[in-house]
Image (cartoon, rainbow, N blue to C red; front, side):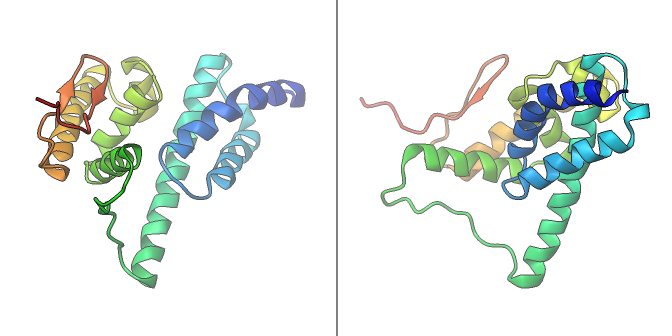
Length: 183
């Protein structure tokens, strides 16, 4: 791959890879994104030929880099002060902040394999086939994990917010209503 071709891939893929990373981790997003492309540059002879396959390859590298960053962050956090509570203060907290905390809290308690497939398909908009290729499993395994992940996410949301026990499902999206209907 020539330097110019790699530059074109970087220009196209960087925003997508950056958003992929940012949805999974809140710190060091720039550094991790740069590491993904540094790895791609070092291994440019291993990059697939088609743009779609290159994106899947980059997502796979990003996935591993994020996992490493999360492990490091957890070790640092435990060493310094232990895990902090992320329970929202119900007085004056806006609805979006509560919803965000509920989603992140529920995602953090999911099994890693279920969380990853849910994020790939629902947040990143990948197809089952694309997610399966990134995860290096069959589409049927990916489909089963996604079904389990959706059910787990809904259950965890309901457990995290017992006063709001209705979580609605649709075929492609999981939504968490934050207010009870007024009678």
